Length: 337
Image (cartoon, rainbow, N blue to C red; front, side):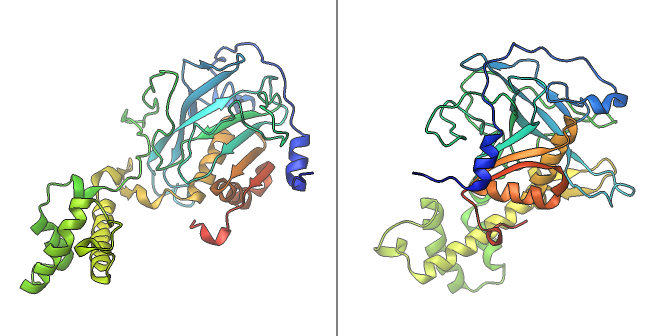
């Protein structure tokens, strides 16, 4: 007999799987005075906006998609002195079939980092450990998020066009989605081989250093990385690997200074978003979602790296944790916050 961890058994005991609910329409617009009434279906429109169009899933369940507005820097100590920039993150949600959800929101995080809003229970999602295709939970509002840096993750099989982020600064300027983290600067730049080598070894390098650089750097660029071979210049010899890592260092330096990763605050200060894409930033964004829907607690089902996400949220916001399942725990010491 397979024994489930006690925490998972306790969690699953609280799950109810009900029948499909009725198709729900958008709720009324609420003012800030009604903050206590924010809900999953009627979130605070200054923080979370669901798209007008929903997707009907097999069984009649609705899947919502929307935009979450969140500060780039979650630092209350800065707020009196600096108007920090905001970003938009894409989220998906499946409302509980019995509203209001008895147990509130449940974030599903499949791991990675790299999984995103597509990480919602599908037909084969087996949270109860019974080897069955569980129905949509009747007592939790499921949701998932494209965390910072993963882009608009997940393949779309429903042909729904993603609308632009609707949020704006008081000046009328658009608040932009958080950019996808992808470094490919050397290949996509107009730099030629001589310029690349000059950036790597400097303008005062000797002729022999330049000749050696050309001998090793060119095949790396031509191949697109380290080749798996035991013959010739492309073999894994020490000199070749050293030049590869020098090239990689240049790649990361160019990526860090790339204009697409610069964001200017309303007060004119420039931020590098690469500094604000970690697990703790995600924990803060999760709590931003909780506040947007007026939920007293947030539950998390985290798999693989998602266990670090759940553990981080529980550490930063212990009083707001509902139920927490860490499935396939990642070592905390391996996670950089």
